[in-house]
Length: 520
Image 1 (cartoon, helix red, strand yellow):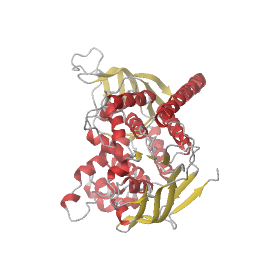
Image 2 (spheres, rainbow, N blue to C red):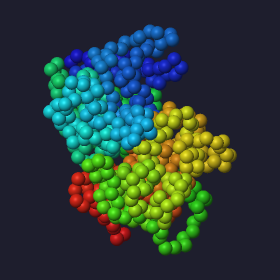
Image 3 (cartoon, helix red, strand yellow):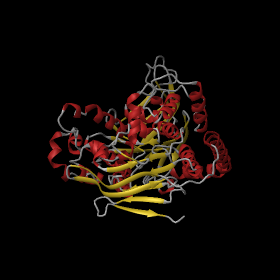
């Protein structure tokens, strides 16, 4: 079998920092590779080196001038589709938004326009192309990117990449946040493309694919090789069957350690909550925190929310679920004030109707938020250390613009230690991996223990270690009695025991929602 990529005794580095001390890896035709590693490991640096066609240097290189034994048949013809690229696309759309200079809302680029940027001549016949059908984007071609769900944006990115003519496609955490139907579409796409890749023939019309994941879940059967990074080094390189055996061994060895860590984490978090809120068990009548009365939201002919009547009371933890594009994020943005149609509807928050004189700060003071939109906001800011991000949770601000107090720093470092970031408070938020950034934003939302905690796909991009910590944190907060949770997730393994109320949304159906309430 021919070598597609060959790396022998190389390092990955910049002028000031070494990211990977040594890497030896050969990618041959007929192979399908999974690149895996925890948040903060060198996995992200390795993928970036591949995608940007960075040179891989000899360990003895002087000023990174000597190219070592590295070769790739793909050269510059590499594309990456990831949570990072999706976030960057949304940032770009925001920067291009000209609504302030127009007498109407700037809808921005549509899916058709964005996809056709790689080949303008295909714009009017996208519906006929197999790549468009393979990615399931026929029905959203005329929709603006800013109105697409996270899953729809990523499928649009994937479609564009397939039509770009790139020879190597790196899919990073492609299943995160996708609904059942989107995962099915993506798995079919993967099986179709990789089945041709495994044959190793030269007439494959599709790009070669490398899959990158944070966790060993939902890995397509066609993957037959695994490259794992732990820290800044390779910890496994070989056949998938051997890696799965290794995981079984690790699972048995680490079960007891994980149980101890979970107990220690839970004890420490409960202690922090008890100290800051007290242990009052006095029962009072449950207040209504959120009330929607016959709410309707849409753009043009696209009606996202139709005739929604819904109440959230203190202590009632809600799971909000439904297909990508069914309106989950729209509902949350009506609560947070990020959707201006809140003012044309009968919506009440914390006992007061929106648009009756309350300020956005009145609302934010009672909310903790983790969302894709917030994540993009922080990525666009840049320049803040992670301690400042945590402290901004106390002040309800995006970023930090006044000096930190000693008390705030003390509290922030307690939460950073709890989340596994002890000693890293001065690191730049922008320098963290996507998953680490998401973990910091979850801690930011939790620090003030708000009456209402809004979590929109909080575990996006988290490895198993961070994911389990965050789920434990969410469960303990739910049990504390101080905070009510609204939680959006497509992953049934992330549903909390405390979430006994469900708002289920039905895309393009009447009625568009069902409310399911447990008697427990």
